[in-house]
Structures are given as C-alpha cells and as structure tokens.
Image (tube, rainbow, N blue to C red):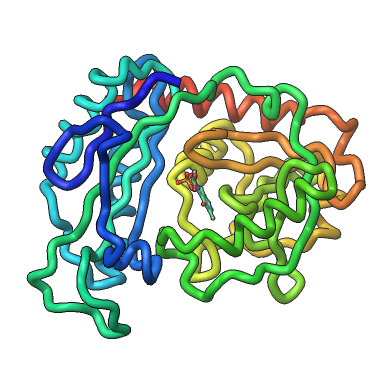
Length: 286
Ligand code: PDD
C-alpha cells in the first residue's frame, strides 16, 4: 500500500512518521471525539452535518474547538489532494491532549491533539448494498452517552466480532427489548404499511448525519416516517430493513437473527432511498 500523507497537529506528514504521545488522553482514557466523512469524486459529503456534530461532541466533553472550521475544511481538501483520493473517507479525531495521567480533566491550556487521515474505500459500488447484510441481535453493552461520538469503540467492536463469528455482517444492539443501533450505523425498518420506523434521538444513539438526511428525503418521497423505538420482533416482520452511515449510505439488511426479511433481497424502497441519498448529497458536496 502506498504510504499516505496524514495530518497530525500542525503538520502534514508521512503516515510512518506521524506520532502521538503515550500520555495523550485519547490513548489513555478514550478522551477524544471523531468524525468520518465520505469522499466521492474528490468531494466531501455532508460537511455541515459532520462539523456541527463534531462541535457538539466537543462541547459535551468541555473540549474547546481547537481549530477554525475553515482551516479544518482546508485540511480536508489538502489531504484529498496530497493522497489523490477520489473515493473513500476522511477520519478526523480530536483528543483533549496530553498530560500526566489523572482522572480529572487537565488545565484548559492543554492543547488538543488533532489527527486526520484518508482511507480509500469503494462506497458507491459495494457488495453489501448489492446483496444486503445479515445481522444478529446482541445486548447493547455500551455506555449511556452514545450521542457523543467518542473513540470509545471497544464495545461495538466486540459486538461486531460476535456477528463475524456467526458468519454474519453486523450486529443490531438491543437495550430493554428495543433496537438501539448497528455497531457503526443507525438501524431502520420499513413496515408492511410503508412506514419508515427509526429510533428517536436521545442519549441512547448517535444522531447520524446520514439518518437525518434520509428522513428528510423519505418525507419528500412521500414515505411516512415514525421516530420511535422498535423491537427485533417488529424488525423481523418488517417489509424492509436497512442501516445508514457516512460510509455505507444505506445498507439494506436482508436477514435478522436467521429470519429472512422480505424476499431476502435488498428492499426496493431501501435501494430507492440509497439512490436519492447519493444523488442529493452529491449535489451539495463541497
Ligand atoms: N459510524 N451510530 C453509530 C454508533 C456510528 O458509529 C455511526 C457512524 C452512525 C451513523 O452516523 P453517520 O450517519 O453520521 O455516519 C450511527 C462511523 C461511520 C464510523 O465509526 O466509522
């Protein structure tokens, strides 16, 4: 693999030379937030949504936004350019910074650590969107502030591995009998009455940037939307199911806990929404 140019703190640097301190609180406490933004044709999708959520995540953790939005956008453009990225993603992470290990937050003069890197990925053409995903349900073992996009991702990673060990693609996490999310995506169903049901926003789930746009486009396409929790049983009996995220856009789900959804193929409405989503978000891409 060709070595990338990444961004760490104030400089663009070869990935093999990029370093972050062992005392960084992102490393010791998962005291860091992140965003993943899709790139298609060298353009950034959903910039406003990601930057707005980034600021909110930082605010919830009392980390001062350490860089101006325009400067951050410029770093995105430079990374796309330096790495000749046409399709894939940009990962952005901001941690509270480096200090002696201590449970209380350090003084506000500690400088946050900023890391960005590119990753090549085929987003528009993907096997999962063509064939659909198979998911299992697992207990949601994550913490209670999932609305903050922190790098504390071991629990969803463990859930994902449970799915992989069962030869499935992902896990839908369940709390008190209701689906919260997929391991790195929002979960949705379309009922037999053609209603798109998706869990309402709260501290229990991440407010997906893709989710928000999809709900807008669904309403425009005359699909009724209900924001409320749903069970695995309801999902199994739905006419369609899908996930949404910056890097899958819409990923149709064709099996839940070994029960085939619909005819076992990606649902028509899910594919239609996927197409609308890609088309519309490309129009507004920067
Ligand atoms: N994950 N829920 C969780 C738990 C997520 O990690 C993500 C995104 C989403 C979807 O949010 P958005 O539509 O804004 O991407 C929902 C990213 C892609 C990741 O961790 O790689």
